[in-house]
Image 1 (cartoon, rainbow, N blue to C red):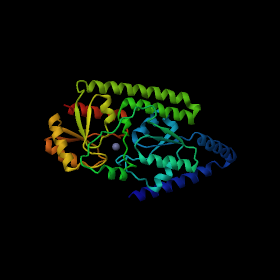
Image 2 (spheres, rainbow, N blue to C red; image 1 turned 60 degrees about the vertical axis):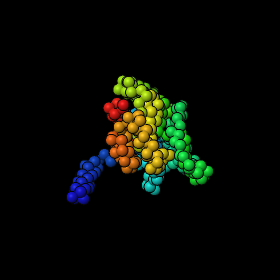
Image 3 (cartoon, protein in one colour; image 1 turned 90 degrees about the horizontal axis):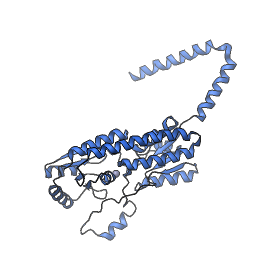
Image 4 (cartoon, rainbow, N blue to C red; image 1 turned 135 degrees about the vertical axis):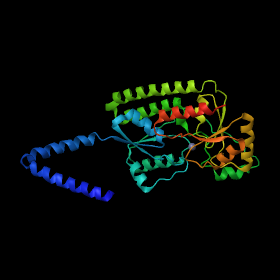
Length: 321
Ligand SMILES: [Zn+2]
């Protein structure tokens, strides 16, 4: 069915172009001149290709860059950002980027990309989005009776201590937007005024978002919440909440850890465990059953940042105790 439509379309286009070229025979030389000029213009007007690590960064780049940028996201929605591996086709596409926007902390694949761009000598501008941010440490968990030495040796590389989920705080998002703006101006100084105007408008939207979240969460300060994957640390810090992670250093909790979490949840009267689709929710469901609560999905890497953060804060406001 699809093939049939395509065939018809192709025939139509071929037919049309024969018809058009037949008509314009007389003005041939002038036409050629014009198309030549157009091709040149569209080449200089081509959008700047910007590769970003996670989806919300694509949103920030597009808000500042408008129609002068095109984004490609290294970690697609639905994938686990901490372990994702790219296909050769994705590698090829990203290799063409003029600017690489990194999270800058706790994302091992970013180092690989920075090295790749350096070896290619591509002149790609690297913009580190954690520049200017106050980074927080990922929650310390105590792994009783674990052979410390062995553990350190085996997971030295990916045992990151700083929290990479920087974008879940609108205040951080504002700084990320500034970082991106500076990068775009460096690459394309001619359009500085355009970028500045877009940036200022978006910063205002982010301020309004922050204010709405503060209103919604008023009175919730000091509340505890459970989350499977610890994505909401910066959000929690900004709004005076306390995040308790089910996943421990990227791993499913042990039976012992789960038992402890059950006690803790009961003690703090927590009834909801926030999960995200990128990670298995099995232990979150077990935990929910144990505490007579439920699992609620919130997405930390959705595309429409402001709408998503409004939704997320509504869900938090409804479920915090
Ligand atoms: Zn994460």
